[in-house]
Length: 134
Image (cartoon, rainbow, N blue to C red):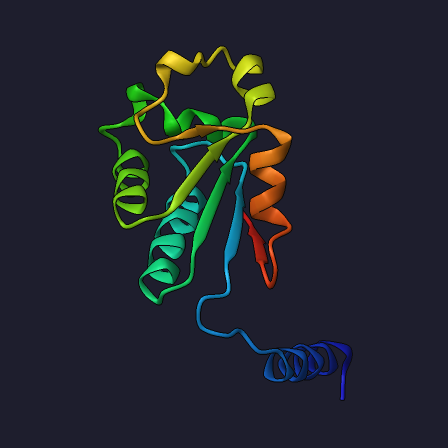
């Protein structure tokens, strides 16, 4: 078997052996610009996982902090973010990235949490939490 086929088989075996119980939380790290397709993919994926009864936290950092602004609220990603929060998802925004990109707390849409070590680490290191990054 060539290397790629071996890698695919190994990944499939690892995934088959892993279990994800109902209710296990998911922490999604998003760094992409709000206008990019991958940001839409991350938020859509988060909403679908939430619908399957898994608590979801989305951590917006780097350029993704702009996704949580009032200026982006009418965009596709802004609407996806609002839908995620309406469905019960948690959204945390990186305060260091906010400062870097000139985003003030007053610029954020309602329901978004400005991160700090306690909030972010509680979501990231909770029991059985899985993580993804976009």
